[in-house]
Length: 96
Image (cartoon, rainbow, N blue to C red; front, top):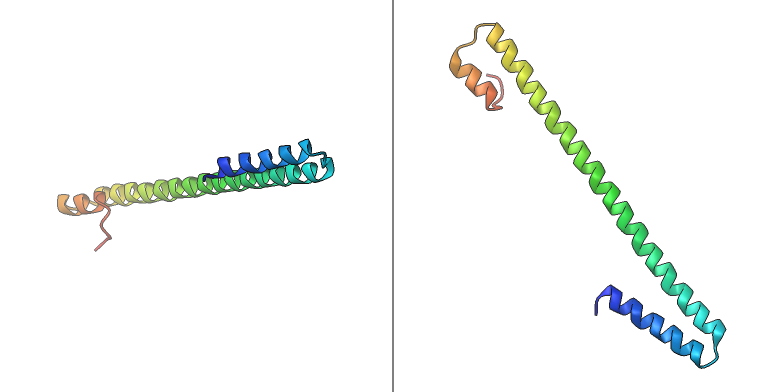
């Protein structure tokens, strides 16, 4: 049984409890389901925000790495480095 089916079953139980005249107990059961749904939503929002933050950090790190390569390549070219050295720097290999 997945989460949605479980919640529907719990709500169904709350409805049955209400039908039997136990309004207070039915309300308690329904509020418990609502609390579970809110908690699930909050966790999903938190995980989405965390993923977005990690993606942004990864993009920033990649951008910094590419800019570093470009700067090293430009400096090596201005210094008259041989073609093999420029190719190595462009490939991201460490400086010799």
